[in-house]
Image (cartoon, rainbow, N blue to C red; front, side):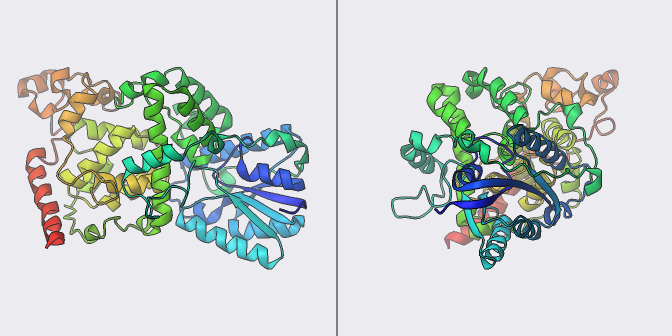
Length: 478
């Protein structure tokens, strides 16, 4: 690669100043490097809620990134506009010789990046882009026949076989940090962009690089217990790093290297979760149609979902009458986060108990989750609905009551988000409709009044779901 007089690094879902592929390569190959971030109106204008936690998280992380770069003697130019226009305009204005950025394999991002690259090359400005948000991307892990994997376990085995310390090495940004250009601009406020503060501070969600580092440090103290604790929503089991992975305030290489080197059951289980993330990203690269609502298994594309009136709204609004489902939905609506096991259970309930199209649930999660990631969200929903790659078989259906009894036995999680059920004894907390009427009156918990009656009867809906899926499976085998 030739040496450039001046280069521009375009930050996107990689809001950190360390172990950053594009930043490192730009600093290595240019005498001066200007850093930039664009609050992209193409994305922001499509958001309907001005109190969007993702925007506030990004905003706070960009503020921290600018301060961190300035502490290194550099800066961050921040714009609010259409990214594909702003980056080309900024590159022209700054008279850079090259633009560097990291990959984003979401289909809309790929189209944007292709347009930016074409415009820049037309101006004789070089473009260089790099893998940064996953360990292995695109076509790096393939089957023996050269095709992409569609089942996780063989993918994980191939992933682990390919892994060497080389793929986990950090990019030493510090070596060339003196080449950072000091250009900075004021950062537009949330209000100036049409947004408003949310309850992030109340939730005490750590933001930015410092927040990611703090969460990672905390998780390492309990990673040995991850395997045992991760499925219980009332326990502090997960790493809580998903939003930091989504916006790149932590380094995937650092996380994976720590898990790989540390060993132990908890660390290895967590490493498998990181591999799942790579798995879904390579699926999205090879099958971008899944991001547009198409099923990975084409035979399920035209499933005639009944979508009973009112069922989807009841699920969204935590009015299903099943405490674990309703508590999970309140957690999502109130915090922008949902425990991973509950994501599976809630998705199964919507699709297989309520017989509502998985796409509606996928879009709702996309709107509400602060850690929304297109590849993982689409993959997870298709898994739960049994229409995707490596899907849960259609004849396996989560029972919301037994899941509740198993993973929230004393009802601690349920009571946290459904305080109206606080007085219900443990033996009835998972199915309050079985509480004797006299006890309902005594406790002030009247099913159908103070808390909804079950919207459906699980056993009956299970029979309907099995018939629904079997009809499609049988037709496909004919």
